[in-house]
Image 1 (cartoon, rainbow, N blue to C red):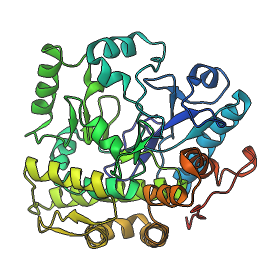
Image 2: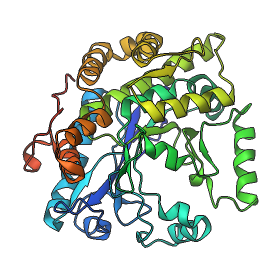
Image 3: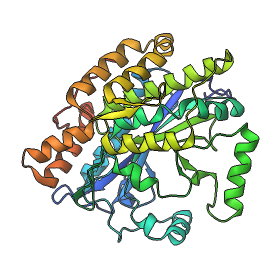
Image 4: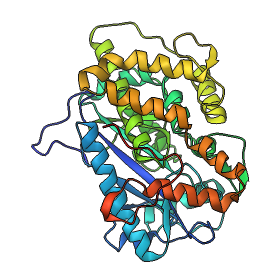
Length: 388
């Protein structure tokens, strides 16, 4: 995925890309379906994921929101078309109601089998999907320093993306139960702070040497220095069904990295959050999403979620303006706050009496909306037209 095509590496906070994970389901029953081998063999352009009931796509390197949106739509279009041919549907959400089954087959892969053997039921229940934003940071030492500056803001992105209230065919009461499930892994959750890239690599090496993980790809922190690309990888967000919301989250992620890089260059003091407060802020965001309060990285106090979102936007507005993204982000964010995030929309569908199968149908409709002539697009409640 990563690289400028001419051998150069991305400039900090200019280039970005998105990896999306999808559930594969039977559209008649809403149950998870182990159909990824069929989709991978059918020109979907996707990549395998841990379970055969999941699949992943990735955009190329992008520099603008229009390019990123077009790449997301194209990748989804290919995947949805392959799913239609296979008689299944794909859903971009953190969980689906059927998530958590312990009999799910692992996708055929030696590495996945080793992980399954080591982590046992934890791995078996890993029916969760995330949106991961890669932001170009050429200097690995800078990337490590930026983790300390951005990690307190990441729960806000989680709240915006929250789409996983259901697990084990029950309402968990959480906005992002995906985050709760993922936090059980020994290398998940808020990223630790390191002095430099050498120290960061030593900590990863220690985890490998102890046998806790096999490779750097098993560092699952909410943000990590990519072991494959010259990027900082923001991993905290749920998969999100509406394309415009994915673009919004990617724009805010890039602006957050660019803002923090500028502060680092100018020796602007950060407002560090201790580990226990970052973890608490993440849990609050996972529990409530946008429904109640979030912990402010600026004041370390619990205040209304909309106020913390406004703090994030104010924090990154100069970077948004430099990238030409400020108007688009303002418009998309206002639309999201009006209609609610995915978990709020799912609860409206459930309250209307459609049941859990209806929730899955609504998620599938949103996932395939806005895909244009490549597929027979189905409109869904809460779907919006992008301003970018």
